Image 1 (cartoon, rainbow, N blue to C red):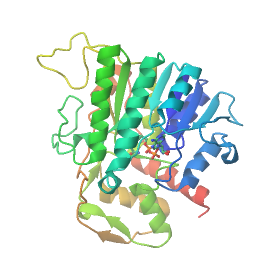
Image 2: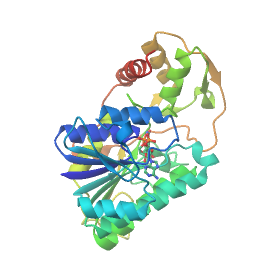
Image 3: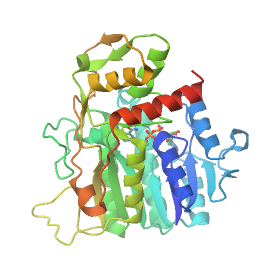
Length: 350
Ligand SMILES: NC(=O)c1ccc[n+]([C@@H]2O[C@H](COP(=O)([O-])OP(=O)(O)OC[C@H]3O[C@@H](n4cnc5c(N)ncnc54)[C@H](O)[C@@H]3O)[C@@H](O)[C@H]2O)c1
């Protein structure tokens, strides 16, 4: 398959690209390489896949020095003209859109960044799929769409109309936008609600990275909601396995779907929503203890109240994933954290 993956200088896109390159797909990676967090981590990921920083130029396809079936282009999703040219020239069999402005907390300070990348960027992807014959689109949504919901575990059949941040609202909007394109143009679209993803090459703005960094510098960590948080931490390889199965099994219309009793997770159109989560929520304090174990030291904690936009608990129902794709994430948290810490020490030489 010839696949466009957006967000390949990012955490999840990097891992997905590596997996698809290794199994022999022809992969084009796209990323703006923005400075939302340490760009050295982004260039490091690209370098790992054989994309040399000195070769990168805006809107130029660069060949990987390590993988003949990988090319990379630095491009903004908002740059419709050049995005269309890329689609026209490459004729992709499938597109996986992971590029986005991520982060709940940042969306409170910088709402417009989410409209640009996640709304304008996503409509450009949808339009490009429509005009250049791509019939297999998968895209990142987020567990944050569950917002004020308190019925655990979160099911894709639940209504999700009460987001708590513009980030969550932008992801829910993507699902709605995708549905219209599945309905109007028959494009297979699958939205993936990822649950707190962690692992090697992870994001510098997320808890595991922040905690590890602070701990190694002997500084205190900020623990929100006084540690009273439950997170369905999901290892990045498990996420990537789920995405791969979705790419290989594009959404089909649900012939039993009824507008009288509309299931939000499927449709009469080729549209599907999945949760990809560990289905095994962990207490934040236990997660921190696992980091302490991996580092072999106790971390000083500063207990703080819940932050605006944050949900106290996430827990994924993954029955659909098991039933339709025969798959369930399974990496134990301690193993995933150990792998992250090993990567962190190696990458930052600490
Ligand atoms: N990591 C998680 O826990 C998590 C959870 C739920 C959902 N998600 C979603 O999964 C996707 C991947 O997340 P990640 O953790 O790898 O994030 P990331 O920030 O590491 O990767 C996203 C990449 O997209 C790029 N990008 C941002 N705006 C762009 C634009 N307008 N045009 C082109 N590129 C742009 C960034 O430069 C970045 O490299 C995102 O859509 C995110 O919202 C992530």
